[in-house]
Length: 281
Image (tube, rainbow, N blue to C red; front, side, top):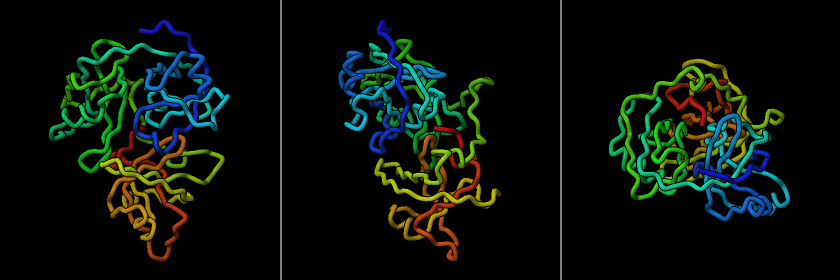
């Protein structure tokens, strides 16, 4: 429960070091105003609600009411970069039980143990969607039950229950599978970030110009780069990458044709496919 007051802040992109870790950053001034210290939990109110742990942002945000969150948190809020949201301190309890459904039929070997490690120390809430990298692909999960009800923190003593049957979305909840790659990032810029994150959480970010390619089965769900870029990223054809802007997409990386090699660009199709994790993070 929370009896604390809301403060309005503007959503901005998370730093690459924070992407995927479910944390938020605000300026020291906002931290002080809301009575927050590092590691406290905040409730975020956008078009929907979400919650994260909060930490101070860098000096560049000093004096500004800015909230830095990653694409997964923004999607849970149904909020984009530069939109206003409300935040407040939240006194979260430790989670006793967390029930999780996949959004598609999957079977994860030792899935509950894997998710216990993944969510350890994280903030969870009912309705939360989370994309993970497992069994060589991106898998989107939804948290359907948290006890005690509300916002809670996962600990060693939290019982994680992973259901095999996919979650049944109602019409308002269904995640679109027709997002355009052109929607990723700043609509006023043709510069997008190719953000690479492997299963063992090593990652590298490079800035590439996005070129489009003709939609079709042969190109579906692919991000094409030249061999030198793939070598720089320590990746092999067929590995998964995320393309990070104001939103995020998942795709398989492949080589550009030899007559189109260019280390400054990535060529991507105009829409996601189900097999490469088309649901938004």
